Structures are given as structure tokens and as C-alpha cells.
Image (cartoon, rainbow, N blue to C red; front, side, top):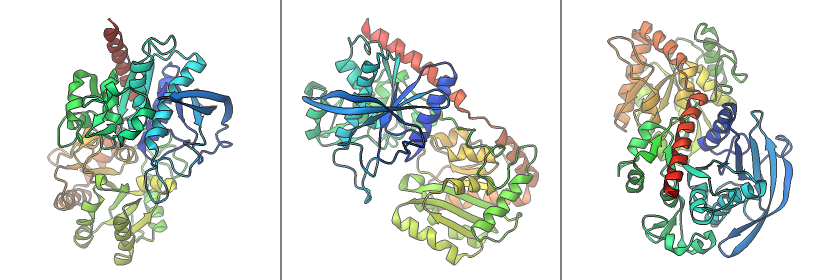
Length: 488
């Protein structure tokens, strides 16, 4: 049973939803029985996904408070049962986590503690003896604690082991301790090694303590988050897990992100026949009012405009790049308002050479992957990253900072042999971005045989979810072994 705050395609704000949707399907294809439990948000298109009422009333005890909810259900094409917890009190809102002004809902700790408890209660209602309860991020991290504190001898859930996946350790669910009675995990668990964090509740910290296994979404990010510099205070607790904290690289959904079959791009193409990529580039240039010239290298970005993603660092380099290199630049993204204003104004200053779209458009994201020659990701940190994996498949060579999953998935260009699949830099600075983009642009113009070989090599890479799902199988087995050892 996977408990998650979002799952594609039903509700999505980021990569978490993609992982839950794709991993659950990949595990089902491998022969496992998988269910996903998530909230029934107001925004979910009930008719589009054939979501049907399943349970009219379900009681969920929270501390000394009895809450009531309903449950709805649908099934994915892969056969995964998706269960939606309906609570007008908690989930019938316009946003998933915050209001239109980006203010967190004051009762988020209650909302997601309730979701975690409701997911386990649903297993009891179904008689579903899960071998694994797989929690995702702080929003459902409490499920691992509830299993150990309240369900250790339960006839349905007593045998379930837990795995907690950390998608981004920067988000921990830290809230005022006044919510702790409602959460219902007893005050003897409100200690510095479990839930207490400078007088507040830390959902992720408690989940790390209680989970039988913990993983994050790339091997490099697992290493990085064992260090004080990258772990946002969680390094001691992750290191305490020892071999029970691992990195498993996210996969890519090649049914959605593959230029050979992608229905959203202007022309399909393959490693063997790249003709369609030229068409995609020219159509992208036309769409964003760029000079239509297939020979000018096109640099693409699809990103949240946030501190983590390093777009503020890029803003200090992009004009030097445009002023000194014969290159075009396109950006799709939204986020911090000052960055939105900066990148929105660039096409006015560099007409025919820069295109920007502030917001998110899924079709345009596919067009940029297909039409770009290079794809830039200057992240300060990146737990896994998916766009660089998509870029490899689309033959848009990644230019990335060597952190987290970016370092794991992109092979550095070797100018002496022509090897590699992209260009990596190590310092989070405008200087490093400028010179690495320059290196890529000079390779495009001056070492064309290297460039063409890299494109073909990149498109050969396979980061399918099947490979990742098999790594999760191993983690599940270890979690079960750890659970059994604890019982002895």
C-alpha cells in the first residue's frame, strides 16, 4: 500500500506525483498487488478518471478525536487500485498544500496525519494485509510511526513493514507542537531522536526513526544527505539508519517521454533517424518567435523558478552567454516573482534569440525537450531530477551541475575521446554556467562528430521504471527482514 499526498495523473504539483503513479504501475506489471491511497482533492476530475464511490463512511481515530470520511476508487490501466479519501473538512479546497497566495494551510499537520491514519484504516476495512506500507515524503511519514505504535499486533497490519521515500529532504513537515495531541502518537515519542525538533513537531524526522527502511531518489543524493551541508538537519538521523538508508534512482515514464511515440511534438524521431528533431526545432523556433535556423544551437530550460533550481544563478550568466555566443535560449517555468519578471522581459531585450513562457504548459515542455539541442539544469541540489533523463532520450544534451541525480545520470563529455552524454559543472556560480555552456556551444560548432556521437549515445540510455522498480523490490525485502528482526 502506497500512501501519498499526490499521484499522477489525478493530482500533481511536482515529481512526487510522477513517481507514485509510475512506480505503482511498474510494480503491478512485475506481479505485485499495489494500491495507492491519496486525498480526494476538489481539483480531481472525477468523471474523467471514472472515480466511483466505494465506502460511504469510515471512522478514523485521531488522538482522542473521531473523524469521519468517505472513500472513492478507480483503477489504472495497469490494474493499480487508487483509493481517494474524501473529507470536506480537510481536502475540499482549491489548493493541495496552500492557498492562492502560497500560504500553507494552517491545519496541514492535521490534514496529512489524518491521511496517514486513514490509509492504514482503509487497509483494515478492506482486510488488506499489506506486506509493505510505502510512505512518501513528510505528508505520509507518520504511517511508519502509526504501524509501530498502534498497529504492531494488529491482525491486518501487524505484519506490514514500512519504507519511507524522501523525495526532497528540504521539506520536512515542521509544525507547532499544539497539533501533537491530535496526531495521537503519545508524548513519550516527542523526543529529540523522534518527533521533537526545537520544540516543534517534525514529521519527516519521526518517520525516519520508525521506518524499517528509508530511501531517497538517487544514490548521489543519499550520499549528499548524510552530510550536514545538504541534509537540512537530518544528517545525524539518516546516518543512524546505516545501511537501511539507500538511494534508488527514479525512472522515466517512456510511454509519455519518448520522441519515437510522443503525440505532443511536431514530428517523431529516433536515434536512427533524427530528421524529425530538426522539424521540432524549427517549429519551436516559430512558436516562440525565434529566428528559424536549424544551425543555431538552442538552449532549453523547463523548471520551477526557485532557489533550489539555481535559476537566480542563471540570471547572472544568461546575458553574457547571449552577448558572446551565437545561441538561442528558451525557458518555460514559474515561481519566484522577481525571476518571472526577469525571464519574461528577456525576449524584449533579445528579440529572435530568446523565448519565454511564464507558467506551465505540458505540451510546450515536450516541444522544448524535442526542439532543444542542449538542456540546462543549474540546480543547487537535485534529489533526482527527471528533465535531464527526458533530455537524454530526446537528444537534447544536458548541461547540469554535478549534484544528486544529475551527477548520477549524466556522463561528463571527454574532449579527448568524444565520450560522454552531457556537460557537467561543479561550482554553483554564474561563472561556471557561462564556461560550461560555452564548452557545449564550442563542441556543437567545432567538434561536430563528437556532438553527433553524444546525441546518439544519450538517446540509447535507458532509465525505465522497470529497472527502478526492481531496486524497490530489494528495498522492500530488506524492510521485511528488518521488521522480522525487530520482532525477535
